[in-house]
Length: 191
Image (cartoon, rainbow, N blue to C red; front, side, top):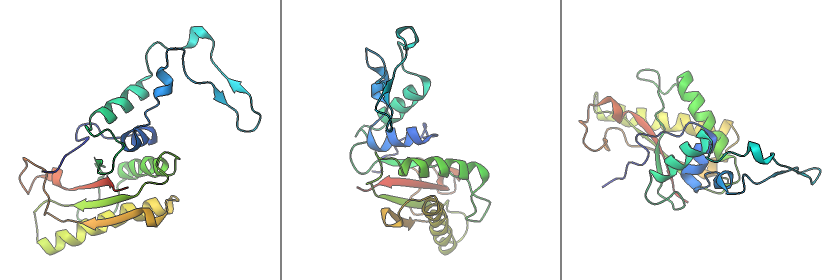
């Protein structure tokens, strides 16, 4: 049985993706003595907040990131972590909508961060079962390739990405093959 991690909580920021795939969810921000001081890489000094500015609870971004990581039982530190990107495409095409480009930009930014820099991912395209199987297999492959090409243009090494199109062969559990939710691109951490 396939595990659908993050079906309700979709990563929205690079920090969310880093948290989801690496388990690095900004835990330092919630230390009892406050966040770790930022250290200047060029001058060697640190900046810290006055005691009265330290938050007793994590900021909304850290809470969201922790919720994303907690939603996957294997805690993001092992391969197999799966995210439904919830990308939208122009009808019948592999062209990303503006909203999908924004989501892809966040994912690309996360892939360039140190926490994810050495990880490899499989990009999986899926369709619903409306139309011919051959057309849907081609469309799912093209949509997965579109995301991979976008990531490469953003600076991600192509050797870190494997692309697969599954067409209508892997509908979401509990849904009819014709359900629109089956039209999706998922990203799976493979190493």
